[in-house]
Length: 75
Image 1 (cartoon, rainbow, N blue to C red):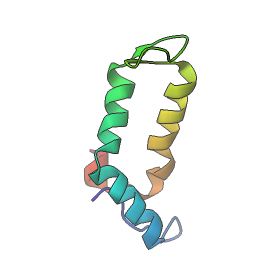
Image 2: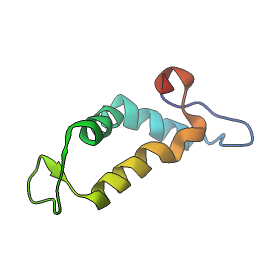
Image 3: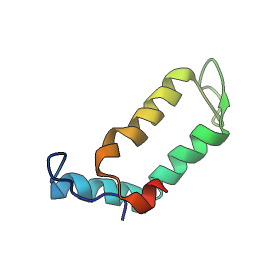
Image 4: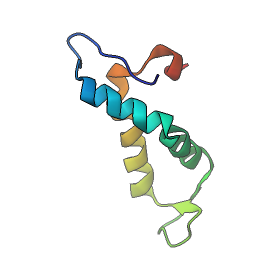
């Protein structure tokens, strides 16, 4: 479980289900791995490197649903 409904924040079962599916597919782990281990380059020509724009987009993907994250996922 990655997300739970929060009153006055988000109670959409579809949104929560999508976040859980995304997490259960290993996507959060993959993004965290990229943010932690990828080399920062000026362009994304190399598959093991990311540029600043990509780092920003990945960071946004992982932080947008912060209001519904389950506390065990945050820890």
